[in-house]
Length: 397
Image (tube, rainbow, N blue to C red):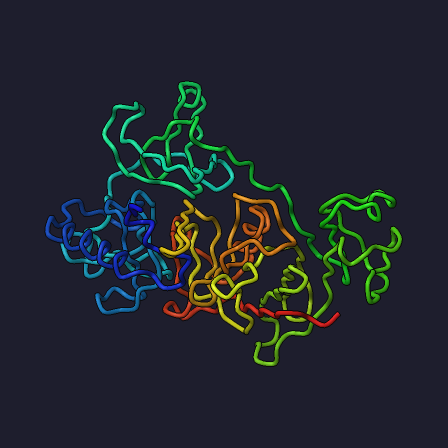
């Protein structure tokens, strides 16, 4: 399978790949050789002119890398070191970090409409391989071959689709007839939940009898061996997933933000200190070793606006622009999921799948703040606090 450089940012991985860093270094060295000729007086707006640009904690080449910016990202330069005319100078981005001036275009730029997870189209290429073409015509040059078992993100272009084509956000065109279009789940969890709380995950006679449907939620009055008693009557445990209250782990600072992921119940609860602020359904790893979501207490290691993800050779798959990503353990991350609507049941390759709305809520709530137009932030390198993630295989109810 052919991979773009950006797709190598993560293979469902918390470690930014060496190829990603090499690409950033090559872009930076090329730009530094050209130098910067347009000096401005701070503060001023500028745009990243290389494919990737690294943000450092301080204006020094050996300073820790705290984040990445993608080409076209706009930033506000608040100060220059030693000055804005130096070809080897640095642009300070307020208190967030510093970037080499040579990587920025200080000319005024027209910022295009932001491509967010909410305004893209999505589709799936099945087991039959398809080619990604450089132009929207069947006899056009090939950009990539043998794309199969892949979820793709497309630019929303009604006219192009009417002509039988779709344009990938990552580049290239595919025939629309070869793609199964996907509708992301509209499920959203419960803010400020009163616990215990039950989410309905199966349409059964027991739930229909009391007028409940899938993804409805009801307060729980009593938890029994095989059923739960709710305000709407008794429900079998097979039909629901129950969220219960839990205390923060002893290691957590007072008032810290953390999430409790209950693998047995397929739920996630967000807490600030001892107060639950959000509860929802998730899909964890499938029930075999290669796709397990590993129990433990973790810290979010990287926060990314999106990441392309790929499987191993023995289980190949590819997913474009997985949104709202919080890596917490090796290849495992909390992230948005646009390709299925099976929340409440295991369905992932080890990550914790959330609906798009839930993932966005969690991403915006979880520390640290992702500076405007940044793609990635490394909380540890930046000296910032991050989200605590507690994974339990089977919580006590």
